[in-house]
Length: 136
Image 1 (cartoon, rainbow, N blue to C red):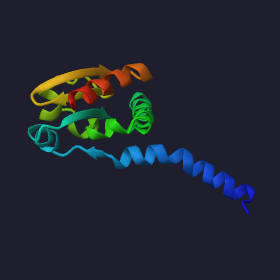
Image 2 (image 1 turned 180 degrees about the horizontal axis):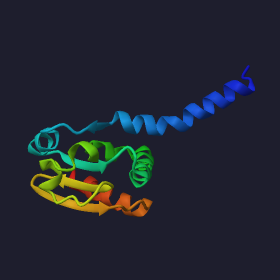
Image 3 (image 1 turned 90 degrees about the vertical axis):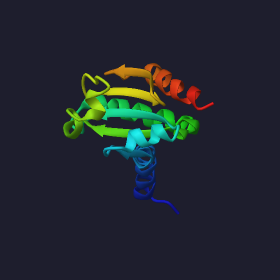
Image 4 (image 1 turned 180 degrees about the vertical axis):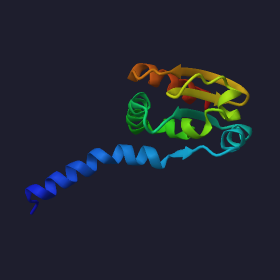
């Protein structure tokens, strides 16, 4: 029989699962990760973020929820670029990334879409859908 403590623990675990699964399915950037994936023909969703950025955290929560709702998004490669480590690196400068909380979708040698500091579910879904449409 479940007691109050067990129910609360199960509820907390259920709330944490979408975030945990999102983090597990997102690759931390290292030099070559994006370029290699693009060379293999993959669609790449890149999140330029910082741990201390509240806008970035909101974007990541929305992305996680949308990915949970539509597992087809997971056919893209999701890469998180740590802004503090890579703001002056080629992965950022070659694409003219203006700030943390920038999201882009890449395929081949093209940028399919970009969102700068947007946190709305509809905005982020539109960007994800651009990537999803490039898969077919």
